[in-house]
Length: 267
Image 1 (tube, rainbow, N blue to C red):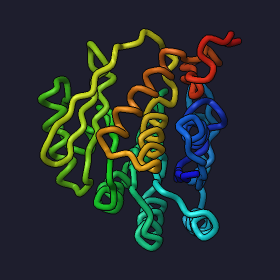
Image 2 (image 1 turned 180 degrees about the vertical axis):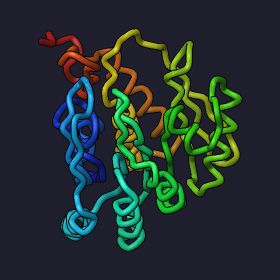
Image 3 (image 1 turned 30 degrees about the horizontal axis):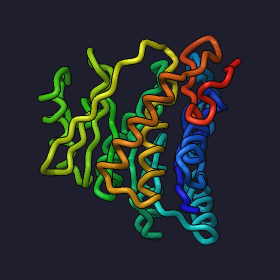
Image 4 (image 1 turned 60 degrees about the vertical axis):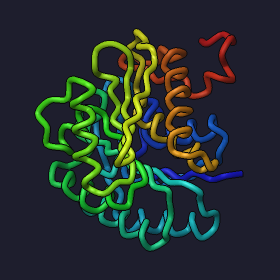
């Protein structure tokens, strides 16, 4: 059994963060292990509190897991502050783990900041050079690239190039907030690959970004090449949105196990 590791914040079960990652790992055929970077008081309506974990304890979690179990791929999600980012980057170099997928989580679905402003530079300088893949959405891509707008495929290409200069081997810009079909762009430093899927009319998209990056991580852990890993993850997350769950009073979660529950009654 292949093992995938997530280093991210908890989500209180609303459908994102470590909870989404572990469900995704299981659904995509790998065994998931996790390191918690922060506890959040969160539901489908928003984030109501964040309690960061001390960097020393994050390092301790990672050390004991890797010593005992190891992993074939790793992803990062919510890292919250500069100290955590620096500690995680140090540990990834120390333990020589990878491939590394960096989901540059900055803002929650409801608009609450999940990354302190002074930490954005650390994310780019410390983690991006170690990353096999970074997966920003459009808002994150704007902040990382310094562009004022990203409203077209050409601008997505420009942003992907600017981000690639910061060191990651591949960049996946998620274009789900653009009009029309759900179009993403993968850049390997030389070639652009466009991935399209039908837009699904639902507000139940909580945890989509976490799930997408986790699925890619799972497929990389299973030995897939980057193009196949991203394409399979795109299919998986699209199915999860199509079969999303109306839970709570805000943005409900996708169904991470839609391939096994499809056709069954969902209550």
